[in-house]
Structures are given as structure tokens and as C-alpha cells.
Image (cartoon, rainbow over all chains, first blue to last red; front, side, top):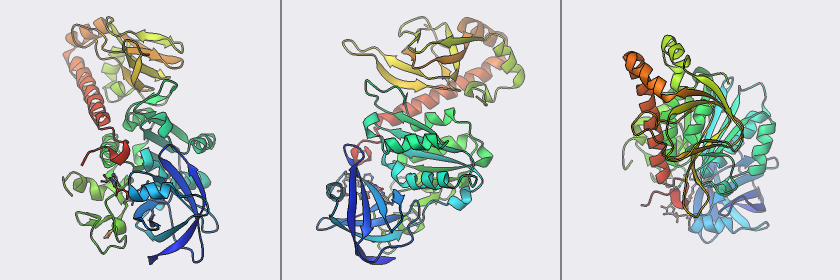
Length: 270
Length: 151
Ligand SMILES: Cc1cc2nc3c(=O)[nH]c(=O)nc-3n(C[C@H](O)[C@H](O)[C@H](O)COP(=O)(O)OP(=O)(O)OC[C@H]3O[C@@H](n4cnc5c(N)ncnc54)[C@H](O)[C@@H]3O)c2cc1C
Ligand code: FES
């Protein structure tokens, strides 16, 4: 881990949706080892600024993919990068998804919007280790059909025996799929609460609602892992920007067991 | 399908069986209409497979789908309260298999067997509360740019 940005080169930039781009980056020199699903890098757009971005794929040859949604100055600049451009990376930071805890159990992935990005490596990992995990379910909520990430890959996941369900808030005229909140998809999957590990990422309101719905279906809080976001600056547990009660999310998160965050998420202004 | 529809999931078996004596199997083809907005709400369904779209008629536009319901979910609660009229329309998006329940008979059964009636209404109320909560969250437009919630 380093606290100074290390130069990486964009080797591919592909538009996922109107405002999301997947950037494949490879190290120019020294690589940053140790990325696992759920961990993140501080990604530096030169001359603009630095933001925390999860890894959405971890490839061979120290290749990483970050899927970025343009919502402001830095993410906007990152989304304008093209193959050949340079970025700076620090990291990896934080605690990722605890996939060891999920071994032997069914895996239920619940993603809202860009929250699918940090969960994509989980799905790839689970599909790459058949026999190690039980059934894989991927439930995705998104705003409109055109905002759906990784469309082609979802088809591949389905072919690889994952149950993948998608629901949208705003269907267009051609949409023939589900409409409604992602939690309504929970009704459709036959969950075995004692044998399921749930991994949830999305806007915080969606995370809270999903976690409550999972508890109501009998999943214990310690089998629900959530990935949380707070403003981050240092990424190394020093500045305190990412504090959530006793937790520093850059160090103790972003992935945390719901049994540790349940009461904290209920406190306003934390 | 391996699990009971949610409405019946936790209903004691005796009550479940009593209720089920009133149910009939009913299938709808893709594109079929289950009911139209304003029509008489004289039945409800538990979906066994397939997907049903709930829509609102907007003059001059195509019907707007506001929600879909699928396996294990209950379709329809307007049959519980007077004036027993559907608030939305419902169409099968694909072939749909259901258990269909006649509303008047179910209400009569609930009046005759108040214990069953209470248990059933508790579950219907929970379902309505759940859908209300989901609707409120969707009003936040959670996935809009900037995580929606204005600061
Ligand atoms: C651990 C972690 C992992 C992340 N992973 C990803 C990822 O994989 N892909 C991705 O696109 N983004 C990810 N994010 C979010 C990303 O870091 C922010 O979108 C980014 O910091 C915004 O910076 P900006 O300069 O572009 O916008 P700013 O100018 O900082 O913000 C623009 C507007 O968006 C609001 N805003 C800023 N950050 C957030 C946020 N996190 N949620 C909601 N509203 C926000 C601000 O209040 C402001 O109104 C992650 C965040 C964290 C903490
Ligand atoms: S970002 Fe500085 S302590 Fe977490």
C-alpha cells in the first residue's frame, strides 16, 4: 500500500451507460498488489482531484477495472479519459467482501445502481469456484432499463446458472421485465435463511431497506454484509472524513457486517 | 416453485386449507387482461408463475406500468374494502399461472371464522404496508444522479 499515487495507464475505456464508464487500467511501472472484491483505490484524475472508486474487475497482469459514474468534477474527468491517458492510483484500501464467510452457503447479491460495480468481482469469483458456494442469486435494481450495467455479462451469468433478476423504477415503452423496488425481487427467490449470505451495495437508503427486508425473512444480521460510502480523503484511517460512529469506513469498511452497522445507520447525521 | 405464496407462508395449516377450498387454478395468456382500472374487484390471485404488470391509464399515452408482481406474490387488495373497485389495471406480461380466490366467499369466510379473518387481514395489511413503503422509497428516485436525496 502506498500513500502517493502510482501512475497507471488507461488501456480501455468503455461506456457502460450514458453516465458510466469502465476504465481498464494497468500499471506504468510498479503495480499495486492486494486488490480483492469490495476493496477500493483512491483514483487521481490529474489536475482535478482524487476519489475513492471500488474495483469492478481484477484481471491478470495487474490489470484493474474501475466502473465510474460521472456525478461531479472528479468522476466527470475520469469518465472522459480515453485509452492511453494516465491516472494515479493509491491503495488498495479498506476491507472487502468476506467471501470465506460465504463459503458453503448460498450467495445472495443485491445491488442498486452503480452498487453493482463492487459486486461484479464477487459474482465472477463465485462463478469461478463452482462447488465452493451454494446457489448464486443476483438481484439488481436500477432507475431505467438504459441504466443497467454489464448487460452482456448478465446474460453470461445466467448461462452460468446464476439466477439474475432485474427490476427498474422507470420502465420505457419496450421494457418487458420487472418494475419496482429491488426488495420486491426478494419475494421471488426461495431463500434458505440459515444457509444464505447476503451482500448488499447501493444507495444507503436502499441498503437499509434491503437489510431490514432480509432480517424480516429470517437472515441473521451477521450474514448480511453491506458496503457503505462516506466522503473520503486520506483513505488510510488518518483524517477522520469517513467516520461512521466508531468506524472509519476507509479502514474498517467499506464492507461491514450489518450487525455492526445496523444501529449506526439508524442515527441521523452520523 | 418450492415455497408457499407469501400470504399463506405463515398461515396455520388448517386455515390455509379452509381458504384453499375456495381457490381455483386460473391461467392467463401473455398479454391477457386480469382486470381494468375501475372494474369490480370481485377476486384476487396468488401468482404461481409468470409476471403481471400493474398499470395506470393516462389519456393520450400508453398505459404506464407502475409495478410488476411475480411468483409468490399476491395480486389485488381492492376486494377487501368497499366500494370494491380496482385502482389499477393488470396485464399478464407472459403466460401467468395463478390461484384465483373469489372475493365475496373469502369475505364471508372471514366473517364466519373471525380467527382466520384476523390472521388473513393481518397478512394483507402487512403486504399493503410493504408496498406503501416501497412506493415511498421509489419517490426518492434513489438511483438518480447524486444519490437523489437533495442536500
Ligand atoms: C469506498 C467507496 C467506493 C466507491 N466506489 C465507486 C465506484 O466504484 N464507482 C463510482 O462511480 N463511485 C464510487 N464511489 C463514489 C465516488 O467516490 C463519488 O461519486 C465521488 O467521490 C464523487 O466525486 P466528484 O468529485 O465526482 O463529485 P463531487 O463534486 O464530490 O460531488 C458531486 C455531488 O455528488 C454528491 N456526492 C458525492 N459523493 C457521493 C456519493 N458517494 N454518493 C452520493 N452522492 C455523492 C455530492 O454531495 C455533490 O452533490 C465510491 C465511494 C466510496 C466511499
Ligand atoms: S478517509 Fe481519512 S480516515 Fe477515512
